[in-house]
Image (cartoon, rainbow, N blue to C red; front, side, top):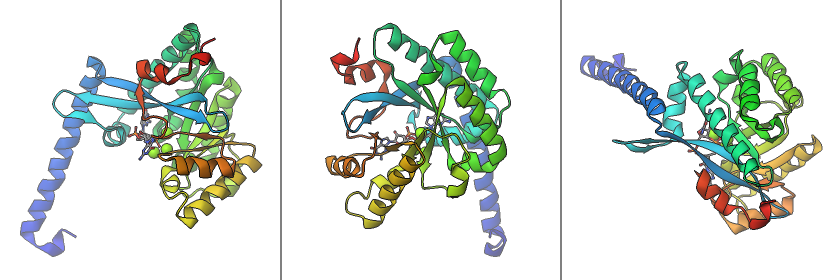
Length: 280
Ligand code: C2E
Ligand code: MG
Ligand code: MG
Ligand code: MG
């Protein structure tokens, strides 16, 4: 591409590339420092059982507050961290925070909440993953039955054999697995049944069109039916309106997550969303 545009644009192209590389190195340095200086925080977004309206769990979402740049969204630094071993450090940290927080809520008398943590593709490939998760759960006393790991289709399809093996090991520990952003990848349905999945998460790009967009309606209806046929819980992401919720309720969708209930918030604010009878 650059060549056909002539010399001037070629050097421009090179400069742009090296700027990007500089940006990457600089961001990586900042991120390392952020971890050390405690500028990362785990936020929690409620997951609501549609039939009862009760908050039954939360998804843990990472937040980075940088003094100079302000809030940096995870989509801007997680892919970056993925390119180095930084992702392992980062993910271990998230898992520890979540396990500790989950244990604390139990000790404070809250009814058991299912807490979901996102797993990056590289983490599933990491041979030490299972051992690390097990050790963290033991050390914090957070029950494996309350931990859920979110994976995407891409993560599973990279090496389906290995993924299936790892997921089976996690299941044996009592951990449940959910398939995130379902419908945006290109996994075949035949493959899906090979993985021990507990939850299917309908991607928010489909939820958005409900109930006006006929295709989004058809896709959501199909995912709910298929998930249930395979014995899975179906959760809709990105629910922002009452109309979307009503449509999903009619479909028999089990759980929802979205701004209609709350965005991801700090742990302290999260418990304020729980109803008083969630405390035993
Ligand atoms: P995801 O796992 O699919 O998370 C859902 C994203 O949708 C979150 O964005 C959440 O804030 C956003 N969201 C929730 N409700 C609504 C809604 O009603 N409307 C709209 N428009 N958006 C909604 P966020 O927090 O920016 O996270 C983006 C992605 O970053 C996540 O996608 C996940 O893939 C990744 N991520 C976040 N935290 C972690 C982490 O600790 N580890 C790893 N590996 N990835 C993470
Ligand atoms: Mg997720
Ligand atoms: Mg998602
Ligand atoms: Mg995503």
